[in-house]
Image (cartoon, rainbow, N blue to C red; front, side, top):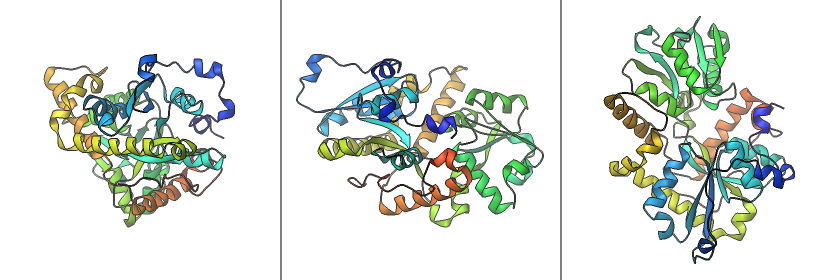
Length: 351
């Protein structure tokens, strides 16, 4: 099985005290005094530099956690793998993962379950002056995909080109390369690739520059593949042990309510975003005007991915998308079960 899948989650059997110590935790420790607080704590493990953290920072700054009857503890980790180790070892209660990884782990006997945090956004980015107007124009061109061949947006593009062009993008393009997000953007800028598919926040960096445009978006790909997918497709979500949810139903539901309330703030209030600017712009350089444009692009792209509903219809659409992705990605993507594992979606909360 592909090592990328194996790293999606680590089973409890693989977790040891040494592994926990090696998880490279950056922050999130709390004092004995905090442990005595009246409100129950919900420890959420996230990548220190990840976009998921933006919602949590807003939740804490606005006191939305305490207003909903719990205290949020943000535990920063250097990598997603480190956060996976933490939840497997019960060092945190919640992490962020895609529902496909949760399905795979449930098929392996683990009890993780999932509620959506954000939807799939992104697409194919090209230079405006490239002459590329349609996906068919990628014939004979080089496409760079990040982070890997199992990227969900890329797999959906493969399904789309098979359905609409009669051949896989791997056959349409001259070459498809894979690598880290900075390399993808650099390849497009230098002309080493004529199109890229990157993580949404790296796409946003390009779209802040008027020299680039989106050729086709993931939303368009989804609705073209299946009309029932003409909606936001939640991909990344809050993941927790089902056993924890059963024992702490009020607490986990209060966390999920706070998450929904925070999303509404981020959607409606421009004033919520300047306090996040430092976290959003880490590592980004440019002129003041370029940085302002980048900040707005990141804000607007993030808002596109905010999930506004979690209903039975949303779950049905996600299951349909799972089937499409499973057909293309195979066992390396979905694990032992080619169908969505029962219990993947947490049924104790909807919005």
